[in-house]
Length: 388
Image (tube, rainbow, N blue to C red; front, side):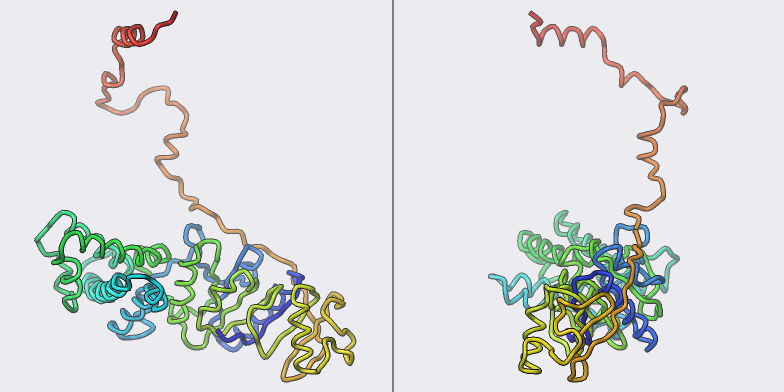
């Protein structure tokens, strides 16, 4: 990760204002602006953004597998990149038995190639509705498991698109116990892709000009890392990642390949452009920077020598190899609250909590199975329990 610029300060309204200003600046340069939001306050920075928030009504549906294909432009290379994202090399190096992870990676690459060709056939030869590519990968993985566990020999229609013997050798024609273990490992690495992707066909996100906001609380750490990685592939050029509360995502952000703009209380990564607002959490970092650049732990030539004495609206900036005092805007938070569930009424739940009807409506209702024989009940009660 390369940090283009960062803001360090204890006042949240100054951090939000810094990121908001950078968002406007990069949008003016026609860059794709992607915001990693830790809460509703940060989400409110981008007013007209598409929001990635699975489980919320405002979620912008994305088919990550399809969009990686579109971005790379080559099915085989895209399938390899997808497998690499789902089963990273560092994970393979860290496990005790890398055979399973290496094999799972090969299987996922083969499944992605198969699913792409199978779904392309469906979309060009049949009527909608269509699955997303991630949905097709899920369906093929499920049907492979069905064949293995049920011992089915009849070929599935998508098997004609298998690119090589990988799936047949490692799963379909393998010993049942080994195949079952392989399926389990493959499923564990595919699950995050299914959770972050739409099950239905979506338009590619690649050509969208609107800014994009990632609502971090909607994902776990593995899913968030995957989202950031895949988006960095999809928007490899002319994009910038904005992180208003970067110290909340220190490890996640460090693993990305983004050019980023960060704001936080504490330092996350070094940058050639740093603005210090009022704060004490980053004071030691400031003193180290000042000593390295001037020989002093404070800046006696400036009106304000250290960040912990700054008033509202003022900051100390290190830019272009020099220290100077700058104006720091303040932004009042305008939270964007998301709706946890869809507003559509679940018919089953609505029926569960509906008032008791006066008359039973519907033909053929036979109450006999629901009526206990009174004598049997009394006999059971008297035989099994002694009331004295």
